[in-house]
Each structure stands twice: as structure tokens, then as C-alpha cells.
Length: 597
Image (cartoon, rainbow, N blue to C red):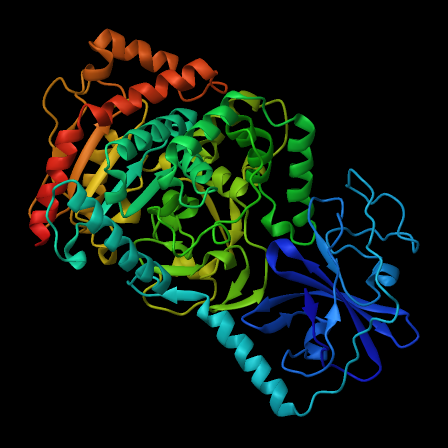
């Protein structure tokens, strides 16, 4: 790795610490006598450097000539990340941007909140970065204008696909066309293949394991390569997060499945590691208390007990545009929109964008959580990691309409604490704050922050993520792992779509099927997508009504992590719903294809 000299003001030198994880850099400024002046954080975006505070005074640019400066591999800073030190950082960079404390000048000693000593790498004293004054005010103006363009391009308000998603869909259709031909479903035009969405409902670890078992059998049946979108709620997103750690997981699902099952059947994340992760999350909020919320605790101390890992990757970072897998969509809801019954509660995360599915307002996924005003980013924040995203998606307890009241009843009279002030979940900066756009409801433009929680508390299946008109879905395969009424999600989806004037088939359930559901239902309508509904426990894989109830008792939502035996058994039951209905699925895919030709 190497860097060229940078331009700035006279008689000042720089030392740069590269924060590998988020493309984030810490810049330390020194006088010519080597005394420390200041430090600040900057970010690299498309070849340009941006930052705050003193950084804008220095106006660093990249297109300059000069000798390259070698940089050696970085150090462990005690928080699990790697740095790269340039210039005389080993001698002078005593500050850690993630810590408020300073290090002794000799580089030794233990920093607050760390578990091990951090040592800076040795860098030759002769290595320096010289800086010069900027050529003109015109260069400064151009630099600021480019910065504004980058900020504004992060927010998009329109009913269309993101360009990257659009390109992926075009590539994926070629794979779907080949898959259809292998299944003896003729399709000569890749632009005429049906758009198929596979949905995984919520249901905690039951949904996580059930979705994995279902996907395994879809792959073995040759049907998985027909799927364009994979969307999940709550526990299903835990499965998705595990799968997409592996590039092209759908091409090696047997191996990936065994790896996931082995992890889920193995030891839990240690309490020390979980608590350490919580401290990392909380430290991030020290400089920004507005983002402090209970989801950090939920992620580190609860979600890790089920997924049995601390996944610090990011959604945008782990995605490859040439992926051979279905396009992933993770879903949550806007809590204030749900409670106040205004705006658009349906919120989605994809590798490209995060935003409101119904009104069509999006921000780059890597910028979700950054502070915006009137569509312009005013304070950058690192992208949320996958553990936190799984906690957002799987946080049914965060629903204040029920759980807050229940807990308040239990502690009422024992404390003077106002639970409402503490019951904050999924709080992040609102990228629509201060905007003046008629397409965006006023409520979404007026608040600086919004709270995001488990979508299952409103609808336990991610229908609205795939019902966006621009996604043009022809066939929805809904795998329902919900506890309770086996038809609640599809019935509520139909009712909500009717109110929102979104095309959805009528849902009529035969008498007695709520107690003894079958394993395969199809709902169709004129100018609507076809919806296949598959309840997890049914008369086909369980037997009679008594057996169905027994299985539900064994796999209730709120219980501890499953044993290896329970995981294996549940995967088999979920998989049977696919193997028993392979011909039915093929027929509906064939009809959807025929309808497009």
C-alpha cells in the first residue's frame, strides 16, 4: 500500500492512520518542530477526501505528483480493528479516535476499554509527507461542490430501482432463464422470465432454521436458481445474514448449510466477548448520545446467544454485484409511523440502499445512520454492522404498544423511572430530516431521528418489500414460520394492500383450515402477483391437529437456543414442505412463465 504527498498549508506535516474497516482515516497534524496540533477523521469517497473541522481548512486533494510513501501493515488497536501508520505516526499519534484517553509517548500502556496492549508499527523517521498551499480559491470551490454532489447523491426519492439493483436483475435473469430451461420450462427470452420472490417470515430461531431447511430443499429440487429476490423478517434475516457471509452460497449450499448448523449447535459466544462488543457499541455513542438505544444491548447480549457469532461485516461490504445468489432484502418498520399511523412504516435494507418501500425514499446503505439535513450529509457515521442489523430486524420486544405496557405493569410502584424515556430501540438519524419534498410525508421530514424495529410486530412477512411496483413481481413464495394463526400474515397483507391500493389477490381460507392447515395454498387474482403460502407445521408433515399443536409447543418463539437434535428435526420438517410440493411449485413457475410470454 502506498500514498502520494498531499497538499495543504505551509510548514505542516501529516500522519495518517487508516481505519481499514470503514474506509475511514484519522489525520494527525504536526508543526515542523514535530509538536502535535490536532487530529480529525476523514473519509475517502470516489478518490476525493472529505472530513470535518480542521480538515476543510487543509483542503486535501489527491491529484498531486511526488514520491510515493510506503506504508506498512497496521496494528491492533485493542478494539479488534487494523490500522496502517504513515509518516511518523508511530512516534506522535498518541490518540486513538475510538478512545478519549491518550497513550504514553513511548507507545506502551493499556488503553481504556481495551483487552490487550496496542503497539504502533515502526516507521522510518525519514518518511514524511510535505504539504503546500492550495493553488487557488477555485480549487477549494470545486472541492466543496464535489462534496455537496456526493452528499446529495446519497438520498434518492423516486419510484424506480437503484441502478446497481437494476444491473444485477438483468444479470440474474440470464441465470433464471437457464434454470427454467433445465426444468423443461421453455423460455427463449431472458427479458420474459418471471420475477419470483421468496419470503421468509419472522419466528426467531424457528424461522432461521426453517428457512435454511427450505432453501436446502429448493436448491436440491433445482428451484432456487429461479428466485430473483430473497426477503426476510426477523428470524429469517438471521438465516440470510449467515448465508450471505459466503459469496455465491447458493452454488455450494450443502457445505454452507453444514457450516451454519455446526455453529448453531456449538458453543455460544462467551459472555466476555458479548460484553466487549456491547462496550464497543456504547463507545460509539459517547460522542453522539442521540443514537444511544437498547438495540445495542439486544444485539450484543441476546442476538448473539441465538446466532452464536459476532458478525462485524457490513451489508454493502459483503455484496458482490456479480453474485450468483438471489438479491437480499432485509426488512424492519419505522416505529413512529406504526404508532402514529402516518408516513410509511415499511423500511428495507438491501446491499445498495436502505429506505421506505412504499413512498420510494432511499439512502445509500453505507450512509444509513449518518446525519442528514435537507438531503445533505452533515455528519458521517460508519455503516452499521450485520450483528446490529440482525438486532434491528429481530427486535419484537421493542414494540412499545405491548411490551412497554407489560413491563410497566410489572415494575409500577417499585421505581420512579419513566420507562418511556428509556424504552428507545433502533434509533438512528433520519436521512429525510429537513427535506422539502411533496412525495415525503411531513412526519418523516420533521424529526431528526427515527426508531426502527422488528417488522413482525406489524406484519410478520416482508410482502411490502417485494410489492414495490418497480420490482414487478409475478410470483411470491411465502414460507410462513409464524406462531398462531397459520394464515394471519397473508390475510393481513391482503387487507393492508387493499387500503393502500396495491395489487394483491383475494385471500379466502376454507373453514377448518386454521386448525388443520395443508402444506400448500395458492392465491390468484387479475393483474396481481400469484401468492403461494406454505405454513410450517401442517397436516402433511405433522399429521392431525393434535400433533400440530405438539410441534408448536416444542418450537415456541420465546425459548432458549435449540439443541443440535431440534435443529436437525426442524430442518427436516421445513424441507418436507418443499419436497412434498415440488411438482406444485414447478407448475406455478410454469404458469408464471407462460403468462409473461
